[in-house]
Amino acid sequence: MVKRISHKDSSCGAARPLDAIGDWWSLLIVRDAFDGLRRFGEFQKDLGLAKNILAARLRNLVVHGIMETVPASDGSPYQEYVLTEKGRGLFPLLVALRQWGDEFFFEPDEAHVLLVDKENGLPVRKLELLSQDGRVLRPEDTVVRSLPDSAANA
Image (tube, rainbow, N blue to C red; front, side, top):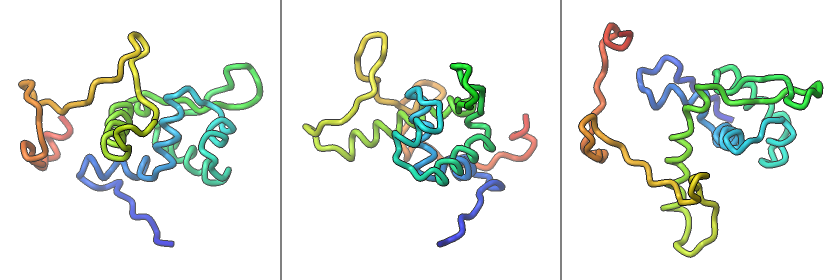
């Protein structure tokens, strides 16, 4: 098996988070947490994941501050896993991934789940990347630039 390379020192905002969420199980655990799952057994039942793999992924999510453990809400001696603010910040990423999957991985008439607004039951509007002045941005409208250390810390 190839050893994973850490991106913790990368200057790229896309590479650095991959140490925390760079495998499919971690994102699926986060997805399930958004869907209300909190207990180890709930994650394992939904994902069908080996206990040792699930434990390692949950531990990694906790270490990276994406999830935290809290006493069980029912007063039992168990612990539950809940998303932190940092973890809840992954919501737009999961919505974008879901919408991309809906567009490119299903046939037009193929049944699948759909993310809807609880208030009105309508599908969530497709995410768009907007410029500071409100224009829709495409990949060719952007460029990556390095920030000097002092600007990055301001």
